[in-house]
Image (tube, rainbow, N blue to C red; front, side, top):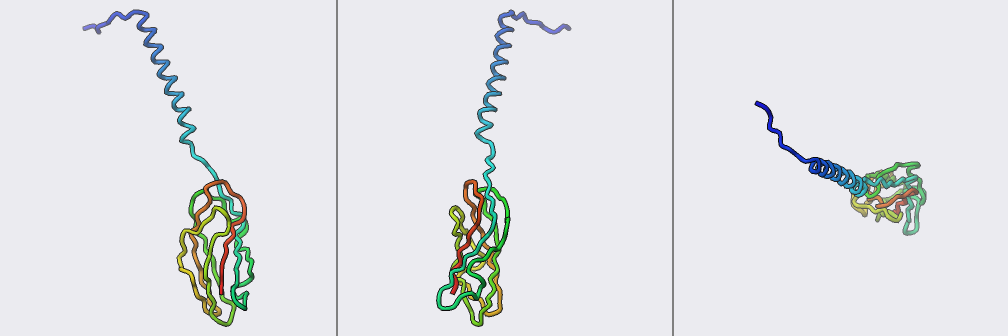
Length: 153
């Protein structure tokens, strides 16, 4: 048995060919147009140094070390808008208990989301306590220092 052949005009074949070409062009243009819309943005945050500034209140100071401490140099490059964990260890070099009253991110765009220990945190003489900070990064490109501000008494 022979296949059935339908007679199709040359005009119909030409129109069908044009429709296929137009459909392909529309698909390609759609992919190009929407591809830019959904592309991944690789904004980065490059923390060069983590600095800790300790504001000692009261008559004495220095029991947790220098009021300006460089904790880390060339720390890390991360994606903007993410959270990252950073641990800070406080050692009481004094002869009486002292307290970490607050820890904040002083660099614009950074914020401390949470800490594994609540403040105020009292530390006995000769003892150390580590505090793990969950820090939210800025939502834009950044390269510079992260300044942590600590109040101690």
